[in-house]
Length: 309
Ligand code: BDR
Ligand code: CA
Image 1 (tube, rainbow, N blue to C red):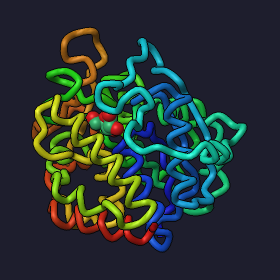
Image 2 (cartoon, rainbow, N blue to C red):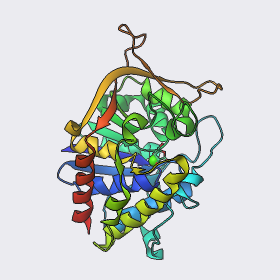
Image 3 (cartoon, rainbow, N blue to C red):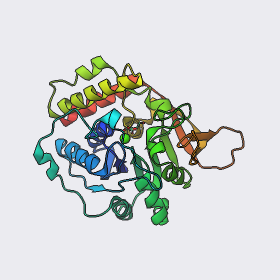
C-alpha cells in the first residue's frame, strides 16, 4: 500500500488520473488532494477537483494552494481545457459543497506528511509551484518523501513551445527546485505520455455505462476534440501515466538520468534536459519514462472507471 499526496490542476487528464487513483483504495492510500493554478485559475481547478471527488463519493481531504508561478506571470491553458479548465461535463450545483481545507496546500501537504509514519509518494500533475514551496519552506519533509512522480517535461520535444512542456514551462523555477532537491523523481514527460493515448472508438465505450463513466465520456470527448488543434489523431491522457505507473510500473520502460530545467529567458525556457554523459555533472536521479504498453494502460483505466460507477 502506497501513501499518496496528489497535487493537480484539473484539467481533463488530471481528473481521469484522480478517478483511477480513487478506484484503487487497496493499493493507493490517498492521503490528500491539493490544487495549483495551471490549466485554469486556482478557483476553477479547485471547483473541478470538488466535482470529481464528489462524483466518486470520495472522502479524501482537499486543499487549494498557489494561484500563480513563483516568478513569472500566469497563463492558463484555455485552448486545451476550455474556460472552466474542465469543459465538457455538466455538473450539478451541489457538487460545490465538497469541503475545502482552511489550510493552504503547502501547510496541508506538510501536515499530511508529518502525520504519516511511513514514507509518502507525491504525485504532481500540474505546475510544481506547491511542491517547490513545500520543499523550500519545510525541507525536513524531504526525508519522509519516498519519490515524486511528475507529469511534466519531455526529453525530445515540448508542447507549449518547441522546447518546453506546459507544466514545466508554467513554473520552471519551481520545477528546477523539485528536480534538484535530491529526492528520487519519476518523470512522465511527453516522451511517454503522447504514447499513452486513447482512441475515439475507445472513448465511445464509456457512454451509457454509469454515472462516472458518463463523466469520463464527456471529459474525453472534449479532450479528443481539443487535441485536434495540436495535431493529435488520438487523445493522450498525459497525467494518467503517474497513477498507472504507481499501480503497474511494469507496463512502462524508462532510463535514469540527472535532469535539469532551463530557467533563463531564452527560447528553451522550461525545457527539461537530461545529462546523458557517462559522468554527469550532478547526480540527481530522475527515472524518465519513455514507453508504455498502451493496451494495458487503457485496460487499467477501463477497469478502474467501471468500478466507480
Ligand atoms: C500537461 O499540461 C496540462 O494541460 C495537462 O493537464 C497535463 O498535465 C500536459 O502537457
Ligand atoms: Ca495537469
